[in-house]
Image (cartoon, rainbow, N blue to C red; front, side, top):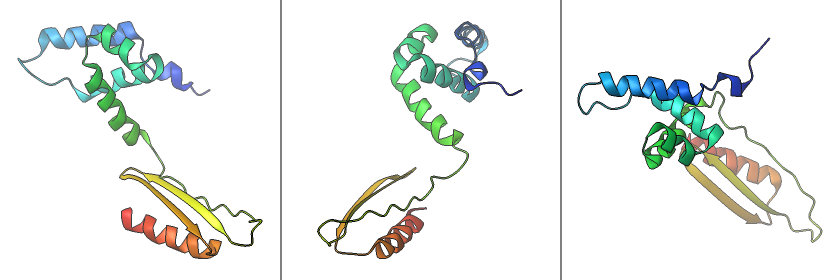
Length: 130
């Protein structure tokens, strides 16, 4: 039987205890280990950034940034390409594509081209950024 995602997230008291133990035994000015940041980020995704940061005595902004990096590293498969074809009432094709990846977002709006031409263009652009 597999565990649900929420059951894999550590309990807030457990993370508090681990952080306190680290704070008491750490070398002066040592950064918080990635393992503790990952546990805090998992809690923040479930319980919210402000609540988690206050409970764990962490900087909310840094916790939010750590959540962003852990989300990207958690992704197991790259984003999929989806081709949508729509019928146009005016006879002139009009398309808007939005591509989003780790490096940002690209939006393309075209009129009067075929779906096949736009698919080729989109794939070419996607290959350049990845």
